[in-house]
Amino acid sequence: MHVATVNLRLREDKHAEALSAVDGFIRRMHAWPGCLTCRLLTDAGDGHSLTLVSEWDSREALDSFLSSREFLILQGMRMVLRDDPQVVLDEILIRSRMSLGTKTH
Image (cartoon, rainbow, N blue to C red; front, side, top):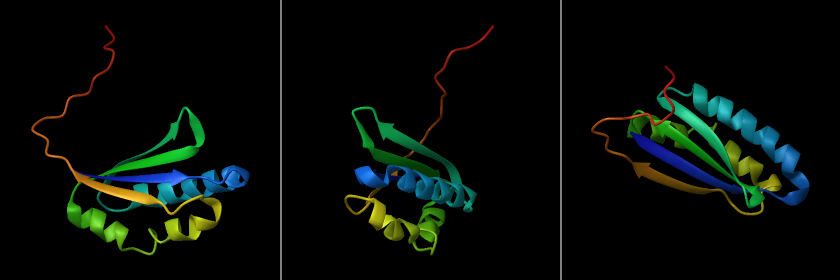
């Protein structure tokens, strides 16, 4: 599995506009072939910092998205961001996957 983490720092005066743009970006990413899941996280201590975490079934699928016109939308978001988006790519080797949670009986 491959994970792409995108860190975004929003301009304070563009918060609502940035969230709207990120929402559309997430919808397009999630619909992309090979995208398993996509989550948007916010920093509890800094409401203007967002982290977008997506999981991909293959490096090819992730690379396809990263080279797509859809991914360029992040560059278009520059007007509502303090800094350029920071992208980190990771490969995760999984022997088994376990979900931790509360069981109901």
